[in-house]
Image (cartoon, rainbow, N blue to C red; front, side, top):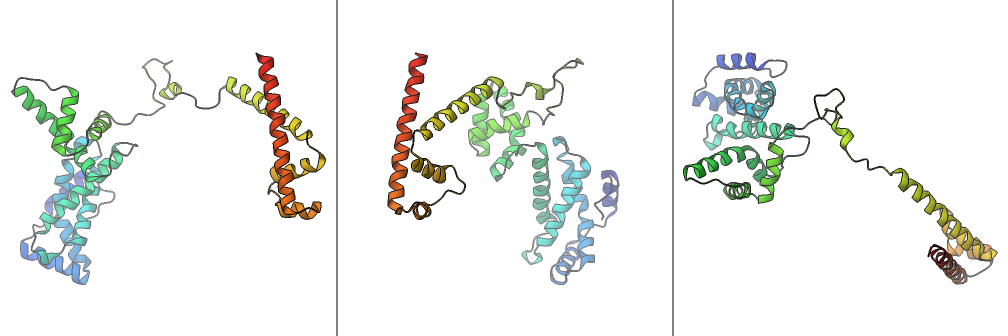
Length: 292
């Protein structure tokens, strides 16, 4: 049965006309596909059980996915089941296929429920598809016994029942409370209503911060230039070649140019940095004294 470019109604109608396979015929088709890769046998097997896939897809309509897409996913799950089915195990194909069909549909629903990944573990998947049902039963049982569960008690009971951490239940509550909304949607029905994106905080540097950053950068540049000119020519040359050049010169190359040993260049570099540090500290103290 072709799964592309077909409506859910037409696929359902074709599925209802498909043959019903007895156990013996089903087994022969499964062997033909597994052992001989007989595509006609595979097509006949898939077509016969497409009604099962469509029936299972219909159970997930409440999650808001298009029925046609759900049927497509169910069909993919059915084909995976046919490819992996081992007829020697003595299990009917329909029994085996149910798991693969359901898994394929559930994966599709969870992928398309929200832009935020809803869950990846089997426990989280179980929570996604069973939380509302378990919650309704717990609330019904509590009402029968004459008491009302608060939100925390309800979440704790759901977590215990499904076997997941409480934080997963609280997270899933938010996921299931509503679908994604566009940031370009307006906040009200008024023509002048702001879009939600206008309410987001601008994380770019603000004007005052930009001015302050520019001032601090310029001040630091002036301090560094003053500290540099406090050095003698040789010290200034070593600092410039070692720290302001890309790539930095090695101690050995500078020693060769200056006629000095590598160790002597290292000593001059250390002495220059010491002078610059003292000069910068002195300038900083002057500024602090002026401000005070």
